[in-house]
Amino acid sequence: MWEYQKKLQIPINIKHPDPKLAAFIISQYGGPDGELGASMRYLSQRFSMKDDMAKGLLTDIGTEELAHLEMVGTLVHQLTKNATTGEIENSPMAAYYIDRTKGVYPTSASGFPWSAASMAVKGDPIADLVEDLAAEQKARVTYDNILKMCDDPDVTQVIKFLREREVVHFQRFGECLNRIQENVGAKRVTGCGMKDC
Image (cartoon, rainbow, N blue to C red; front, side, top):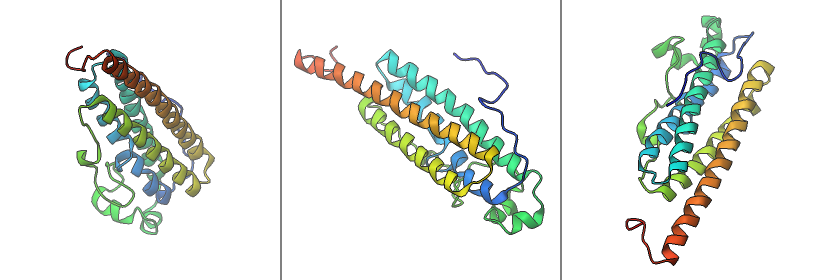
C-alpha cells in the first residue's frame, strides 16, 4: 500500500530544550485536533468511500498524517530530552512529567489523553469530507497558536511546514467534496439514487 522511508519529511534538530513549548506542541500529537486523530479518522473513513479517488485521497493523507505524528513526537522528544528537572518543574510540562517522565504520550496541551471519541467517522462521504475540512482548519489554527508561542527557529521551521500541509489537505478535501457532490447531483438529476447506481 505504501513504503515507509526511515526519515522525517524535513529534518528536525532542536538545539535548546524547552519543556514549556513541548507542553504546547504535545497537543498536535494527541490533542483533539492533532495528528493521531487525523490519521485514524482518514484511514477509517476510507472504507466507506464509494469513490476510488476519495478512498485513495484519504489513504494518502491518512498515511501522511502518520508521518506528521512522527514529526510532532520528535519535536516533543527533542524539546524535553536534555531539559533539567528544574526546567520541567517550572513549566506547564511538570504535571505531565510526573506521569510520563519524558516519554511521548498522546495527550492534549490541557492534559486530556487522546481518545477515539475526538474523531468523527459517519460512513457518509459528504458528512465525512465536511468533517475532514473542519479538522484540517482546526489543526491549522492549533499550529497558528503554537507559532504565536514559539520563537525558536528550529521549531518554527517544522511547525510552518506542518501548518502548510494542513492547508494543502484542506484544499484536496475541498476538491474531493466538490467531485462527490457533483456526482451525487448528476445521479439525482437522472433519477438514480446512490444505492441504485
